[in-house]
Amino acid sequence: MPSVVPLPVRRHSLVSTVREAYGCNKVVVGVSGGPDSVALLLLSLAAAAQKSSSCTIVAGHIHHGLRGESDNEQTMVEALCDELGVQLLTERVNVSRVQGSLAAGARDARYEALGRMATAVDATYVSVAHHADDQLETMLMALCRGGGIRKLAGMAESRQLTEQIALVRPLLQTEKKDLIHVCTLAGAKWCEDPTNRNVSTPRGRLRKDVIPVLRELWSSSDKHAAQASRILHAAADAYEALAPTGNAWKRKKLAELPTPIIAESIHLAVGNTAKNEMVHAIATAVQDAIVEPRTFECSDGCRVHISAHTVEVCYI
Image 1 (cartoon, rainbow, N blue to C red):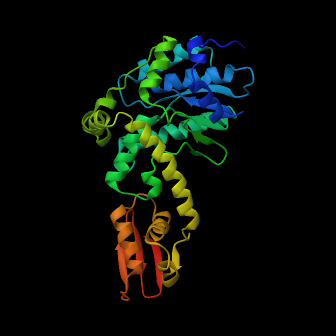
Image 2 (image 1 turned 180 degrees about the vertical axis):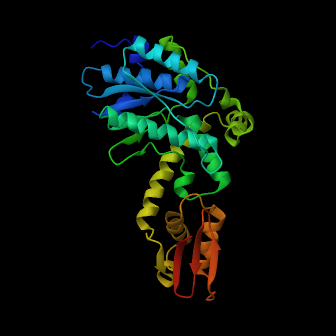
Image 3 (image 1 turned 90 degrees about the vertical axis):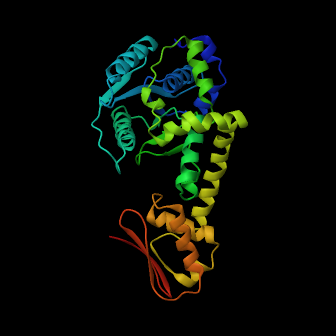
């Protein structure tokens, strides 16, 4: 079927990037109505329309019911998908706070809904429009909050959403300005989410006050962060392959490993919500000469007990 995506978008270099990420899979593309997701939808449809392509695209929109603009955003997405001739699935979700965070609750509800949509249409991929600018913000927050190497690596380009469905982020190496250019080439409209300018959140404050300074000093900081993320994810894979798994170890054997590998074992056992300082304090304690039993309090009711002969992670 001929593509209704404008020719300048179909010729854009990002089309091949998206096509490579999708392979021959059926893909639900998350479309919020913002410029990033609108660009992703346009690029996805352009990729699917290529003669040798065998991927299939379905759009998915989640109505969170948190802002007055949500109804207008859904109406805009419906009009866009109708114009582009792409199937659109919509779902309204109820959002609950996760560890006190409404944003985290909305994210979890959104991914669960996109997973249900993919299941409903027999899609194997869910695609979202996170980009290099998002990655820089995510990595900076992880660096400042502390976390294991996987946390420091930021968002992965792909991960399992469910056992049968993969979440892919084909635009993580792409800057936001390039996605806005795609929308402009297509003459496409988009919505602006006012919460992106909310400086009461850490991400909003970073976006307003910190990131502009970094870009002034290093104009390619977003792309460099995205490239570093790939390296860190590969390093995390290597660390996890070397790190002993489980939640109990012989202390002497564990202590023979490099401290970062011990820390990674602890992170894998207690979860990435544990503070980096605490995990490294535990890893250092594993290797010290103290034989008296000690207990370290981690997050979410998790404790690490170190005795003369064992290291054990316990959950309360």
